[in-house]
Length: 260
Image (spheres, rainbow, N blue to C red):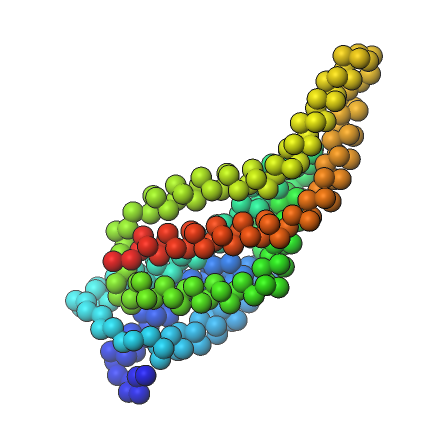
């Protein structure tokens, strides 16, 4: 524990605060809309977490040359925190993409609404999945795990040892691949039902060509889609596990990429 406080200690605290503030303003749960998490709450949480980390982390002397070197070190810490927080938060966008895939099949693709959490246009199903998964994550105490994972990242990336020349293309490529795979897995039950509905409509079009299958198909897809969505609510724990596993994977890759 550091019992003395010098200029060097103040600089070390500022380095810690730079990474913590960037993470808090980009990570899930903390970066939700201003009405959800006020800026004062973020600033207060950043301050107290930085103080705790200052006393908990082993002191690591940071060397730099002049004011420009100090600014570069601060920027590196901000990049590290922002990258870890952004990549973790990007995983939540998988739910929005899965909802858009579902709405395209049901017929709700033209219906969008403003998501107050992410300040983007979101589909109806995407909003539903996002809010349900967030509630399950909060009920399971995932926010505590996220903070613990960020604190543990200091063991791999000590203060002043950020690798800003990291090859983040591998992390982004892995995330983009998982982005589509997980979204398709979430929407797969409804896609399977729609395949059956299309087969039935095709058979009916051959048996009774005088029927307007376009009108019948629209109503049938909406009713069938809502019915399957109701059944898919039972799969929400599995969807939440998908999100948690992906966040763990992406955060680990991000930390490894930024490590010296």
